[in-house]
Length: 111
Image (cartoon, rainbow, N blue to C red; front, side, top):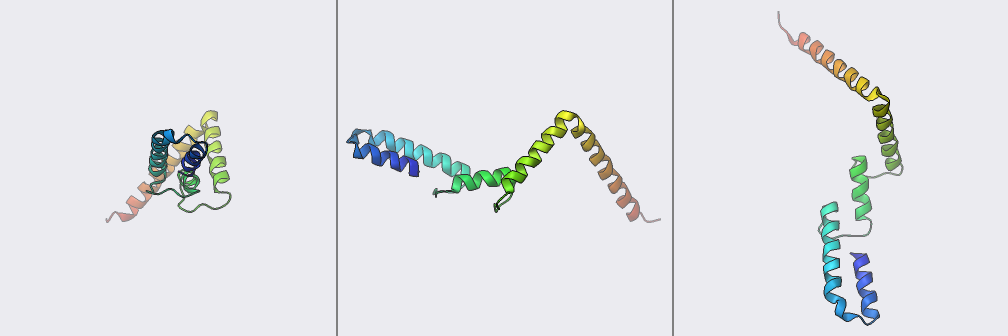
C-alpha cells in the first residue's frame, strides 16, 4: 500500500492526474493481496515479511535465526529425500510408533 501511495504521489507531482483511476486500481489490488497474505485488513510496513516468516517457520513469533534454522531443516529434509534416507527414516519412525502403540495397549489390558 505504501508503494502504491508513493507511485500515486509521484504521478500527481508529475502532472499526470488523469491516471488516478489506474493508480486507485493498483492500490486496491495491492491492498487486497497484502490483506489476503497477512490476514490483516490494514497493511503496515513489515506485515508481509512477518507473515512470510511465520509461514516458513511455523512460529507465531519470529526470532533472529528462525529463518536460517528453517532453511537448514528443509535442506536437510531434501538431502535425505534425494539420498534415499527419507524413506528409511519414515519407515523407522512408523515402526517405532507402532511398537510404542502396541506396548501401551498391552499395558492397558486387564487379565
